[in-house]
Length: 197
Length: 197
DNA sequence: TTGCAATTCTGCACTGAGTGCGGGAACCTG
DNA sequence: CAGGTTCCCGCACTCAGTGCAGAATTGCAA
Image 1 (tube, each protein chain N blue to C red):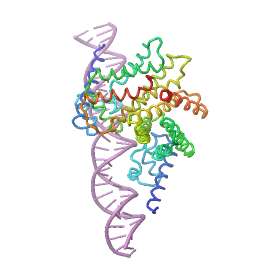
Image 2 (image 1 turned 180 degrees about the horizontal axis):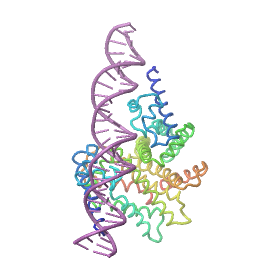
Image 3 (image 1 turned 180 degrees about the vertical axis):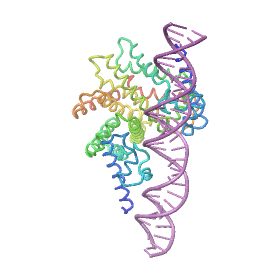
Image 4 (image 1 turned 90 degrees about the vertical axis):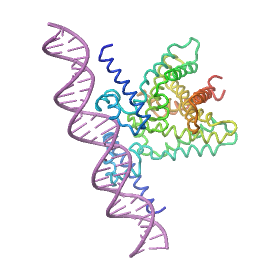
């Protein structure tokens, strides 16, 4: 890893950290890109060579999360059904995101609920990831799943989990990790029931 | 309906029509709000008292679509299960949008695929509608469905359909409008097949 | 018809996101 | 340390969107 690459990675991280801090203290809309760039000690113009837009600061590890899901598909057990593979995949992704308790995690959840552009970005990343997962799932079960079926299954799965969480967070009550886990389990059962017969 | 309301509705429609035409000819990004306002013969500033943002021009009947879904829930048959109600509800929505072959319909589909901000807006509207549908579904089956379960079920349905369509459009095949419509219908049927037993 | 109040329209000035360009600085290779 | 390559960053710009205040329009009553 060359000096260039190391510096670049460090600057990128500095931007994410600075943004987290500023968003926390001044709010998302109250923080300008100029603020963030200044805090990370780079020029405002240079910011855009690290992130294409302000919202992207909130999803710095999106690719890694997707890759974790794809790896879980690749490492499936011989007898697994498509739905089982998705279950394991989801477990991997959520483990990934729980492990790294970045300052961003809680903040991101909050901003997704309150800032439209952040929510939109998150949903787009989710949908892109879904399609990619569906592609790999279809490839993993040739002859059994075509791309459209795989995408429908993946969409149902992700849609159920997302819907459950959405409803959970719409009510200002019961937001403890226990209720969260329970809701996800119930959502997954709900989503996969038709596929199990 | 007062003169004020009539004029306002006419201006709103003029904005939608002007936007459709301009987006078609100059592209979405190539069209400024000033262009659209000028074409509809209002001041640029006034545009924002009709639509909060440029993307909203593409979804002028979002509320009506949601209402159609909610009506379908209200008009359910006595013996229907929640999944049956959702099936009918989604059919109503797609019927609604097929009937009115507005110039916007095809254009919107295209822009959703190509313009990120439009896609983000569409996904947000979809998610908001999902939650509202889940609320009514839960209310229609008290004691049987709580809000979180209803949201999971709704999310699974919508996710399956959206995923299937996403996969369909991911393949860059050129299709005639008739063939395209048929393919979409097939994909939706395929996505919902597991719930029909 | 006229006068007045309530809306609505709209120009102006402004902030902030994001882009194209070009010169200069930092890095890498030999 | 000289060369080319890559990256940084200031400048000028476009456009979306907002706040404000005055002008225009409409609704209503006398």
